[in-house]
Length: 64
Image 1 (cartoon, rainbow, N blue to C red):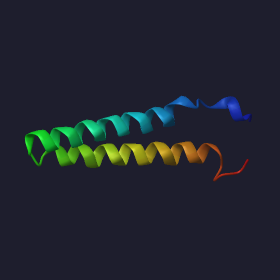
Image 2: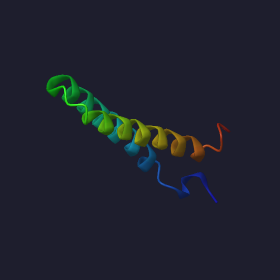
Image 3: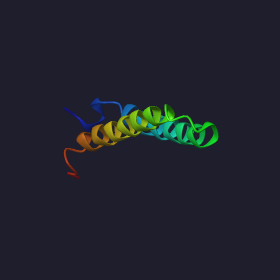
Image 4: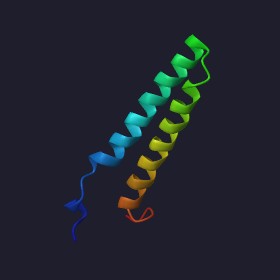
């Protein structure tokens, strides 16, 4: 199986979507002072972490 068999964009899309949603949730939290936005921030950070893990798994633990 070649290295180009899987798409590279999906894990990084998760990372970017998680980062943007976390920034939006943090901004909304500071503006509205509603504590419910913390759930969005926590979920977004989880999605971002999941994206980085999937991106790292593509390289088989850092193998070059």
